[in-house]
Structures are given as C-alpha cells and as structure tokens.
Image 1: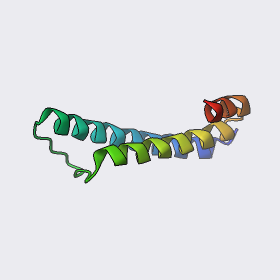
Image 2: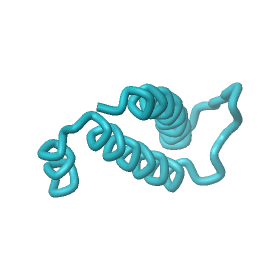
Image 3: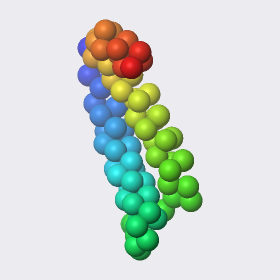
Length: 80
C-alpha cells in the first residue's frame, strides 16, 4: 500500500467533491431561478463542469484503489 499516494489523492478527492457540490448548487439555482453566489466563483457551463469533475474524481479513485492494493475493486469500478 502506498500511503503517500492515498493521502494525496484523498485531499484531491475532497477538493473535487467541494467543486461538485458547488456545480450542483449552481445547476439547482439555474433550474429553480434563484440567485446563487459562491466565494469560488461560478461555472459558465455548470452541467459540463459537473461531468468533467465527476470524471476527474473517477480517475482519482482508480489511482487510490491501485495504490491501496485493491485490484479487484478497481477492476469492478472500471467495469461498472
């Protein structure tokens, strides 16, 4: 198990998750016509950003599973 890689990736996942939540809030604001402001700014295309962010999280999870020595779980995620 490569603990350094896992710790680094977990921090990256936390940051990406915060960005995902922000994009979701912006999508909800757009859908329900309410004003949304964020300290981190806004997305020009929050739906596109959401797809990109989820793909990045997926890629990070693959790295974490490999570093954790969980090849079967990694394979299952790829096949899902």
